[in-house]
Length: 164
Ligand SMILES: CC(C)(COP(=O)(O)OP(=O)(O)OC[C@H]1O[C@@H](n2cnc3c(N)ncnc32)[C@H](O)[C@@H]1OP(=O)(O)O)[C@@H](O)C(=O)NCCC(=O)NCCS
Image (cartoon, rainbow, N blue to C red; front, top):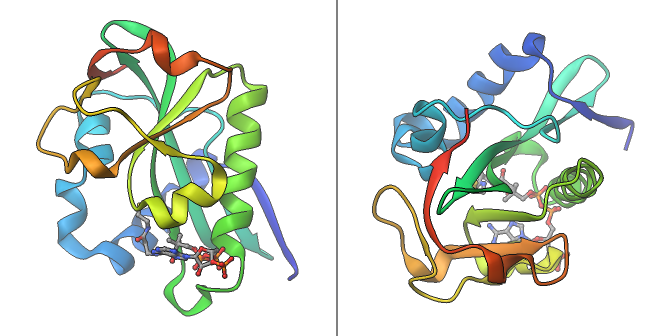
């Protein structure tokens, strides 16, 4: 694989928007991460994109959030690999790069809404029902967290909101 992974820059936004549109269609605007970002959530600097030469082929976004008023966590999503390049290890490589970056940036936990069979590969675990409340309806079995600092999740309870 002659790819490389870099932090997302403002110049990458157009390609990311196109990739999201191709993968999710109009339904993307109903996704939780979009709703949080719409309310002013800022892109965390651990967000990453994968390139094949100059072509952006995958991206993963993370946004700084607060949970019950407490900062230190980031919300991951979406992660997208160009459809024809899926199932070849790229999504995993990008996830691992973003997790490593979030840890070295000092974040304490990563939260997401997603599929446990995939995200469980990276250590994400279900959040006990009721501990964390998303702004909008979410299947509670899909609310997952990865502690970057041991025990971090015990300190987080309440409503997730964007941290501008
Ligand atoms: C989910 C996604 C990012 C994974 O990227 P990828 O490059 O295809 O994944 P990889 O090749 O690194 O797969 C790694 C492992 O995850 C598994 N996997 C991939 N997608 C999966 C999914 N949706 N559910 C469960 N397992 C999945 C693979 O089978 C593989 O398992 P293995 O190591 O046992 O073979 C990619 O399929 C994608 O862009 N999907 C569409 C957008 C999407 O649904 N994003 C997630 C929601 S935000």
